[in-house]
Length: 297
Image: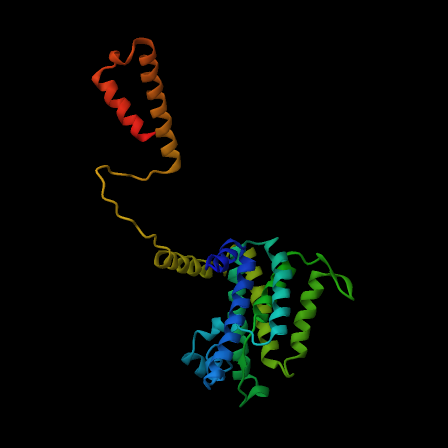
């Protein structure tokens, strides 16, 4: 029988990197299912998805402010998702060797936001993009931020790439940035610009971290606050009211074990007294304690 725990357990028990991948993959699956369902009822799917993608205009962004977050988890093509998640996994692993898992999530969000804002600014102020409008989706800006930050932390770390051989991490970061610069006027101009914004975010985060300031801290606080709210709302345990002539108080395991040990010691003393002098030798207090302890063990 299918249970919701089948879905919840991998997400809850996975590390932060895998949780980011789960969110991206889960969003992709939901989008694909919605695409089929909405089309079956002749509902415009494009209108729905446009409200999740990041527009290249501040005027439009004010109307859909959530898109500065949703776009970085949004993929429509399988291979787009596949290669992004592959890169996220590879470079995310390198990142957490040098920084914390919370910083991984924080920089993923920071890179996506800075990449998105840089994309909008370029479309707003660069003459080449005058009178052009675009919408953006994908995790590439966030991943680029992780690549650049990891490269600053371990610039000479060797990586072995298929068909290329061994190459240092710093050269992979440089190549990633150069490809984005060369592609700024290409078919994926908006995406390449966002990559550059993500690279700026990764560099800026690293140099400020070395000065003792972590730009991802606000994200950590927001996430922790949100998690606590959701836990209180969705993880409330149902209580069963039992009417009895005895009050039950649930104790921590450590306290329970200590009390049980004391009761066993008292029971041993009383039983030893019975063995030596018989049950009749017990006082009224001994008999009452014997009865009480017997009911607890």
